[in-house]
Image (cartoon, rainbow, N blue to C red):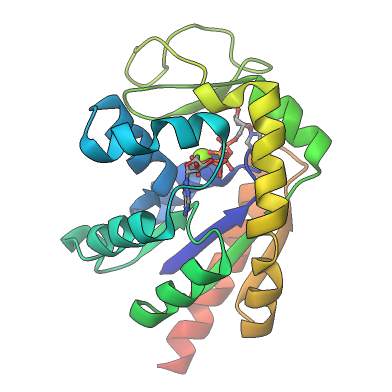
Length: 215
Ligand code: AP5
Ligand code: MG
């Protein structure tokens, strides 16, 4: 099962990915996590992208495409994967189409005012990457690995607004790209993460059944 989780910053791509992973055991390829990991390890890549990410802008196509290509060639991606945060513009989408065939694009559609609330109250585990929100999780450390939770540097309100503008200008046009291809499923992500996942799961089951029948 080869999926793209698509949506604005804070629409719930990471939250959905952890639920899909638990049920279908396919790896989540989050370009944001890979890039943040480079910053945390102070690699050459990390040094070059740190300021760009702080501003909430996109890093170069060349870099993310090479990181994704490399990651997708690993053994654990052979039976499927979820791309989270990639592609983010038409150039990246066209490049991706050259080396992989995607079964389903899941577009999580959430209003921007809701997104602003979610992102400014988000907390993440720097160790296992679990995602929380202060509106429904009241501890300071991670439920899974007990690491102290942090707020992402790009979750300040001014940066969140810039990320949403970047999304509107560069990423949103991809909706038309995938609508034309005919493999996009849209879920309105205003309900709880579990309710959103229940709708997505139904669609994934349908897609898998259709794949089986087509064989
Ligand atoms: P990235 O890490 O991909 O961030 P993003 O796309 O901005 O998305 P987020 O991770 O902020 O949100 P999410 O959709 O995963 O939501 P989450 O599940 O956490 O990218 C970061 C940066 O990296 C970019 O700005 C760019 O610089 C660079 N980059 C990455 N990919 C790139 C690419 N391809 N090209 C160029 N540059 C790239 O949920 C958010 C909050 O809401 C959480 O608190 C969660 O608990 C809560 N929540 C989730 N679902 C629900 C729900 N249904 N109801 C209520 N609350 C919910
Ligand atoms: Mg995310």
